[in-house]
Length: 253
Image (cartoon, rainbow, N blue to C red; front, side, top):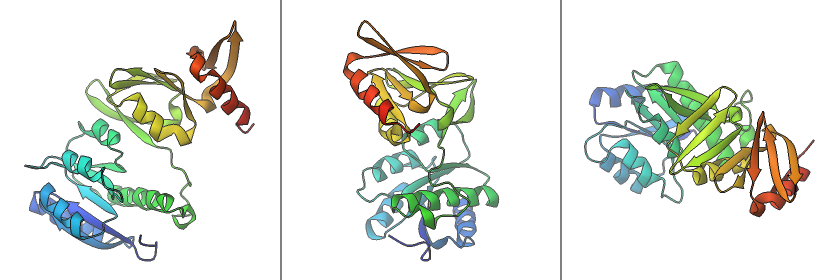
């Protein structure tokens, strides 16, 4: 794995030559990027990844053949997988990008300042992966508050993970509850549990995931446990009651 001094190796994937050239040029101007590789298709990108070590893939989504989403799904199976940053003219894939654990989602036309922010997120995530969070920018927190794309009235907006009080399963979807309301996202609750477990989210029921920082009260009544989250009482299954109480007792006060 490269060090901060080495810089990152980036692979740019786009079937449109002007877009490929522009993004490659902008990345090459960034001191945090040591080398920029290019591929004009998803298939060519996989061939490149088979022969070169790459830290981050900046990929278009709408491409003939193996598109950006399909490429990301293949990359997700890699043992040492590079980060994915989608660069696209459409925001309709933002929720799917989140499900694929993309580091960022940059809209075209690409602005240099926005691309620089994407690189910063890649560097921070890379340092965290390597156990060297201190090597990232001193102004950046060790743990970044993840943003989740949600669709509302045909418009994609972003909410912070820290805003979410609890999440409930709805088949292959999950409903995220915040102070301002709720949002249905196309992500299974099991995926959220795996990704957010280290950030204080715990399962209290087969259909409910709760953020511990938002739990203000635990009640026991005739062997049944409920927790107060905001103004909502949530049922805790018998299976998860002891684990939840032990977790709350260990929580720093």
